[in-house]
Structure formats: C-alpha cells, structure tokens
Image 1 (cartoon, rainbow, N blue to C red):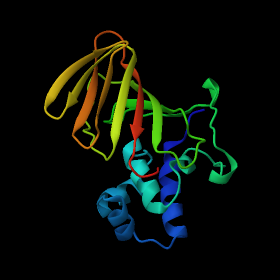
Image 2: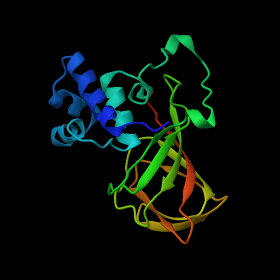
Image 3: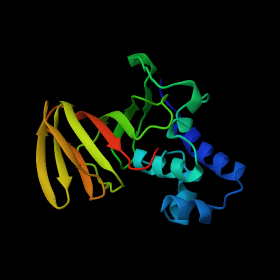
Length: 191
C-alpha cells in the first residue's frame, strides 16, 4: 500500500485545528519552529518519521493515525500483524531526502519503537537527522556510508549499527546496489 504524503500533511493540520491548537503551541510542544510546521502543513511531502513522531506526541495521538484512515484504538489490540502486502510505503520521489520507507508496525498504537524498511533511493542523502531516542540499523542489501557524530562508517549487507539518535546522523547509498535496511527508532516517550 502506498500512502499519499499529501494526506499526512493534511491530517497534521486537521488534528491541530480539531484541538484548537495554534501553530505556535504545536511548535512549542513538538520542539519545532512555527515556520517549519507551516511548511509541513502546506506541503505535498510528509516530513521525516522522526518529525512525524514528535508531532504525533505533541498532538496526543499515535503516529499510526497518519498512516491509516482507520487507526486501531489502543484498547483493541496488543499485537500488530502487518503482512508484506499491507505495509505502508511513503515515497520520496525527487525530494532532497533521497529515501523511501515502509512502516512495519503502523497498526500498533502506543508503541515506543517504530520499525521501518528504508531504501536509500539516491546516492546522496543531504538531510541530517537528529531526534530523541535510540536507533538501530540492520543492512538488508547494498552498502551504506553512515555519517554519525562527525565520523564515517561503511555498512554492508548483514552489518548493524545501534546509536544515540540525539547526535547528528545521515547516510548515503554507495556501490551498484541501493542501500536497503531495517531501521528501528526507539523513543523514550510513547509515540
């Protein structure tokens, strides 16, 4: 299932307005700037997952509401099964982020971890990430050059990295095969 990124931006605005929340207040709660939130709400592109998680927490909703028209309420489940053909794919065609991600547990409410399969579509990934929590990467295919806190690492198929996501990190695909990896983001606060 491919998710329309524009719908994510629209949902953010809808949730904010339904809560009578100003952009200033959401920016404060999500630790983002008002200008950045405005650009997100008026964009056809979804922000990175780490930013979506911050916005979801600030709005008091589970991040899954952005990926589904009918999110499963927290009281109805304690397990999330997502079949391969039921994954939610968010693409980044032409965006400077250069990646595509598939949410692997989008139906599970109230989680502390967000697992994804990420494909680095471009050779360069210009956007730097920095968010609360911890991150785990396990290479499924290809080769990635991981830039972390001023250092560079090469990760090949089968390699893993676990790190403090609060430090600046980014990656780029190197070699003939695009880098594809499992990424699990752990948040200290519920997502």
